[in-house]
Length: 217
Image 1 (cartoon, rainbow, N blue to C red):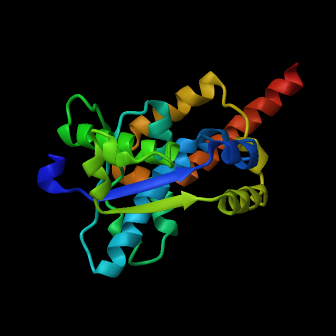
Image 2 (image 1 turned 180 degrees about the vertical axis):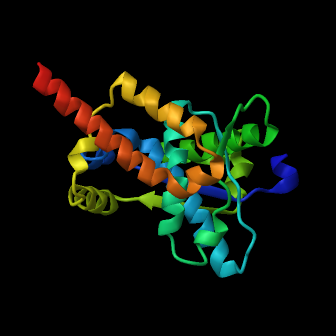
């Protein structure tokens, strides 16, 4: 499949130690995982790659199943998409979906490419020409390296958001259950337009519940 279609490759990477030091303790609980940043770095990088080439067709992404972590990242898609400039925004297609690698052959191919590219990053001094997957290095690719300065800037911007501390703690089980119920019951079109308002409202309810609980103690 890789040989026949010669897919374009997007690499998104960062230093986990820099992320944990600069951002993990600051970011909202729901998006403090490394996966969230790399998820959107890959989506946006491809749009920036396509735009100057005059490509107009939006891209729909299919990711490997990631459980709750993937669902939380995808929930922010509509909001992140609206933040992008015209021209880039239109190239970001429908909300990403998650599929079982065992059932989707292109996902298996993508995993092989990802494994090879990560190995190149983990072992930069080794010659990949001796690896069984050496030909994958010849695939056309673009990279998005989230450097220390970008992580630091993101952390500083997050600290400036009013009421930001309300979403830094781990939500209670009841809060997460109610949020999941809300998301399931919303129509997809409404979810794409209003998700960030729902999250803000749920954060407020969560804060009020904690305050009431503290007073009753």
